[in-house]
Length: 586
Image (cartoon, rainbow, N blue to C red; front, side, top):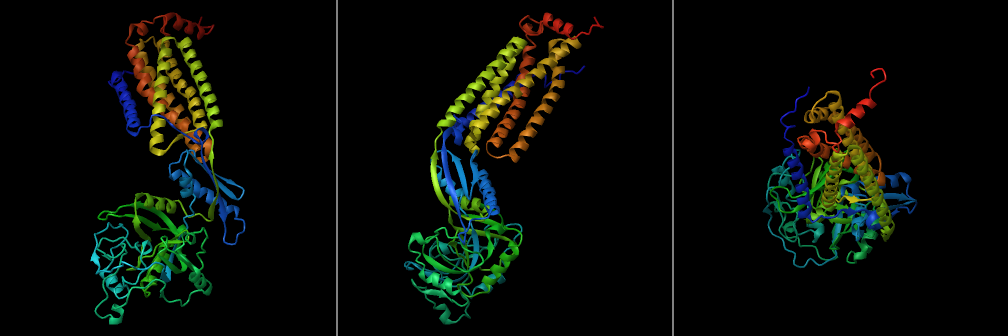
């Protein structure tokens, strides 16, 4: 006969642990002011945006490209924590539906193409006067943290770059107030003029006086040579007016295999750019943060496939080129967001993007790059608000059905198990409390939103939870009939056997929910999530409430002596024995 362990004989401690869990989740709700669950698109309405693809030749996009775009957008939606958001292909368009009012900006951010190109600068021209621009001798900056895989920049590389860079010969504005460098543990020189562009040390004494006396470029002055520039691109560059915001990032898809004329994102300069040697699809990962020893937000990139080799070639070529071809422009969706000088070749396949980012802008850029570059350019065709009237009616019907089912379970348990049925009812109450708190806390932390499929999953889970109680109750009665044990002994012995059955059943249910969640999308995935959540809650309730609570009740004479209303009375037990006795044994 199995003997109760010390842990099993102290049910009060287990119930206190459950109470602490409930209070902790309640405290989290109070701190985050999340007293009600968030509702999904079908219950609370939301925003639906239609994205229309735009190709270089204005021909319909391929289905393969559309499918790839749908997968990338779906990854972005999941990465943003937008539960129950939907991404679907409708003809040649893609429709994104996000729950909650006022979500147009969120959908627009998710739908950004995020086509990243790294292009060598061939020439540029200021479109705004360089008034107030000053240059100073470079000063050592702090020591940024280095990636373990990246060596520090060598003194030889820095000294070799010195005759090439002239801080005064750079366009102003955000386009050059950024830097893309190899992570390094050694102090790097930094120009302290407008912005924070990484610069090289002063020209060496051997430099010619004319080089030292180079004046800053003036507005409208072309800096660099047009040698090797496509005449069509040069003509486009000459006609480009970046002072007009409408000419910056009009949604025109730039061909990475051709030279390109582009504006800085703030309109301070325009550039002639070479073909893209590294593109967004070469990026393996992207993250935003503030490295140790630095104070600005940056975006850190690592490359994959041919990206590391191409990145090393590009930075080496720029390093060995004269001004301004020693700069690499970072072009995002056709706009130059940064054009830093390369102060040394960068092997190893890692880089940093800086440019006056704050936490929100750095995180947004990292997310767009991390989840891939869309294979197509998209423009927003329409945006509309979705009403929740139909969903509200369905929710009311679902809740009514759930309450009816719960009531039937309660009535059955009380009629069949009598006093033990009270344990089942209280267990369902505890499960409901934990489920409600879990939904509220998940909504506040991962933007989990309750939808109709979730409601269905929660209603179905009532039967799953009731099954666990029935398994345990029947095991107790079997032990009392077969072994003639006392109730307190039967509770402990039956638990050892019932526990295995309950865990196996819940494990099968949880595995099914996980598989369904990862293989399905939309409402089916929501149903699977709710089913998996309630399966975990069922285990918590059975282990932390049902079993210890029955152990406490077994100490009461009402149950231990087999009162008629306890469900464990001698008359009921003997009746069960008669029903299970064969004619031969009689």
